[in-house]
Amino acid sequence: MDIKSTASDAAHHANSPAVRPVRVAVIVASNREGRFAPVISQWFLSRAEDFGGLEIDVVDVADITLPTALAFRPSDAVRAERSRIGARLTAADAFVVITPEYNHSYPAGLKNLIDWYGTEWHAKPVGFVSYGGLSGGLRAVEHLRQVFAELHAVTIRDTVSFHGPWGQFDDDGRHTDPDECNTAAKSLLDKLSWWALALRDAKSVRPFAA
Image (cartoon, rainbow, N blue to C red):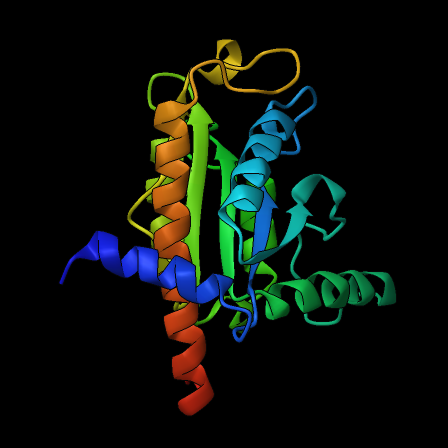
């Protein structure tokens, strides 16, 4: 089977008016002061808009107030916040995590978000857009693959990674040499859409049981 043709078919399927758009929660993983994440996320959102057939919900770790101490009896405020974010994760057919690399891994705020939830991640695809120094954030991605495997999620092989991105974007957030990264984003979204549709259809026939 031609994988490229299959991925293109999935994108076409997602764009069909008879099919509900693929709902993608884009998780912005950095909450560090002075973070570069908004530049990367805005670039990716423009790629997703051009791809079509997607409904995007941006879940920004910087806007989440879940405590780092997981509790069996959380306060009313924590329960409300957990419910608010959980509803958005539940509604998603797929996820894209936009993450930097901190000390050869991913940010603590992202791990905290992941750990507050369980079934919301099950049987859904997860794609990655990473950025950092020489590694381009890929060490963070490889650690995340192990975490999401434990949560019964399917991680996408195709990634987008920016090696030293700070000099690659102009003042308006546009990539100065976009061909390679745009191609990578298209490949990621092709595969993400295929898996999202396949898993969504499968779960409509046979509910997933962890």
